[in-house]
Length: 135
Image 1 (cartoon, rainbow, N blue to C red):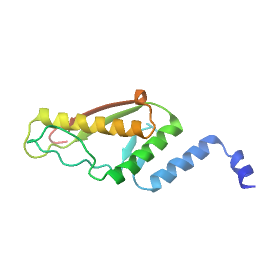
Image 2 (spheres, rainbow, N blue to C red):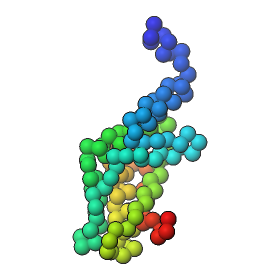
Image 3 (tube, one colour):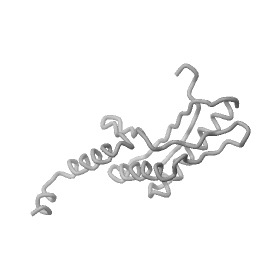
């Protein structure tokens, strides 16, 4: 009987339930008007140091993996392009070029992680930049 009831549901209702389940986990939020996915928690990058080349690594790989799994699951529901626009606040030291390079590395890292989670790389574009002062 449960299978019969489930088969009578509209596909959109099932997708909405899946989105709500993912949002209840508290890692991602989907703007249902724009399609924008916002990361709520769990996707922090390790601090960058101007004394080292710009690089990106997740601060907590297990937590990041859960966020990325949610993002990939959202992509599977809609199968549209993902445009990553990652913004960071510059840390101490370094110049604008360095912090933009760090943001770009972090955006690329996220793009690669989404690819490893099953999102085709052709569907993901990534860019990163530092937040303008005063923003």
